[in-house]
Length: 367
Image 1 (tube, rainbow, N blue to C red):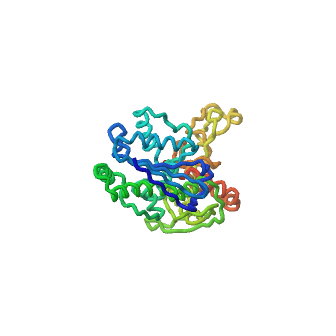
Image 2 (image 1 turned 135 degrees about the vertical axis):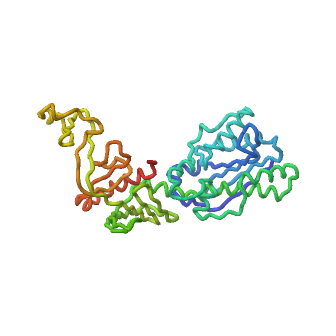
């Protein structure tokens, strides 16, 4: 077995990860294996990183022979047992299950229950539509954030490198193996600013302006839209833009801009507790039974979810949820809903703030 250690001075995360973990009680780790199945492949390296007194330390355990995998596993578990937080990138999906199966094979007690696990991959996955990346692999996130690596290999390419190293113990092969693992661990710290894109949808923004705009649609017809600008409480590393259904989002630095098409016409406002209403077919509307009881029985019927509504004409803005009320729909089971775009909304900044934050909160949901 071979052990390498590194110390990086004054490494300060470029994202306030301390709101999720206690850095001094946090460990990161990454493993290198000869394949995906713990039953039929070998674990040949474990690397871990941790903070101590404004320094970032990395320890790497390398098997010089495959038979040493139980020993590097024991040493890593022994070292990690004093930490309380585990910071990972997709470790819940691969690294942890792999090591768990290896630990079972060698009758080594697992240590995962002691940790609060923060998996960066799981945190950003709902927002992958922002990045236009071929995958969410750690290297792809590093590319998006313009992080440069000296290591140019992926894990699969290093399998034959390790197999050759096990036979020859040539130093240049060991350096390739250590470098890849080292940069994966260091990369987990460097990609932390990707979490700002999650914060874009999870933390309140403050509306700073609302304007109407006329634009030419793809069919050369004139369309009207509302542009709402909002200020973020943090700065994004790089600009992003995307279109989700009828909504367009652009965000750069501390600016968040949303564009909503203005919809004119007639929509329906549906009531809760439909069993408390009558539907009047001739008027095509619903009224509460406390009033409807005075309507001729021949001109009323018990309302259903689909008929418990009142029609409203006007101008509307789409939303991706029903959280902002009152909301309006074309039909009861319509996926999308709308809010009234009227003078009250145009002149009420607190109402605009409530609406925009509700839209952002639900922006990542699939429809």
